[in-house]
Length: 463
Image: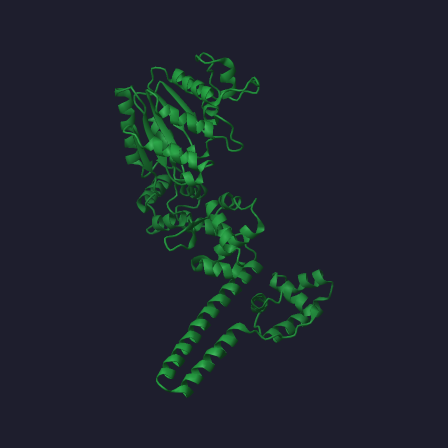
């Protein structure tokens, strides 16, 4: 299978090439290109391909990013100089050791402003007469010292193209500071800010055709685009996993386990309440809404929704309601739900929808009663009031079948998806006895199947 091409980014590549031409033609100051976009939009790959295509080739390239864990002061410069011998630079050796985070760095403390000047001098010394390229990856993850350095370098007479990638400052480790730096980087005549939107359906179709080396079945690009939301990362991952199954698997095939794990791993360290709300939201599908999710999961659901938005699983739509950022994320989370959880969520959702329908019908009878009273027809009004009351009672009350303690135990096992043999082993009774208890539970609850009995148990709070 051919490598996945870079689709839908020709305009952005052209902007970076033009900025480089300006650096080469006039080395009196830097040109800055800020690329923003959500995770997986392809910012890093776009920068890498743009830098590799620059002509003439840069005299020097310094590329760095924050560490994934425990960011330290000047992480960007330490990353950019990793594996590079910078001892010839005209900066003090102890400061260089400190900036590059060498383990043998002296314990000497530096005044922050002085160290910032040293860091700026170091970069300018390495770029020299240029022209050079500075790549600042994931500015939103940088430490305050690195952010200050990037801000300083953009204001220096540096013969370089500064390429910055970042998510929204709201997602930054230091949101206020990152927001100010992004605003300054984007607000000069020498800067350009580009936002990477999701790929279009046409872009996805081009990627599929190039990757699989042939025509793509009709409807496949649109289905793949819907599943991934046009996110370049997820498209690339699905294409890679579907190399033997064909392009159709990208759109409708089962979600590969390693891709599902990339999603569910985000939930692994979270509180059980957060996981429960995420699972319920995934199982509700198109019915997802704050009111329904609160009914299913309890009053704390709104707090967990905000947490899931922070984790990047949910987004708040224009109507103020939560939704999964991409159907693929919902697929992954829903795939972790056990049968009992699915039954419980379905029962709660049905209960809420039934109550809403009942309330609406009751409200209609109440309104009719009011109108009839105004028309001087109290007897008819009373009948409608009684119907409203009956509907509300029917919608709220459930008969108690008076199950025995053992029958409740058996019902709990049934709701967990156990077979009769598993129930017998769990409770230490014979399979024949389990069969008798199951028959009684079905008869008492008025259920036609084990699944109906499980749903009844959840709806009535019996378990």
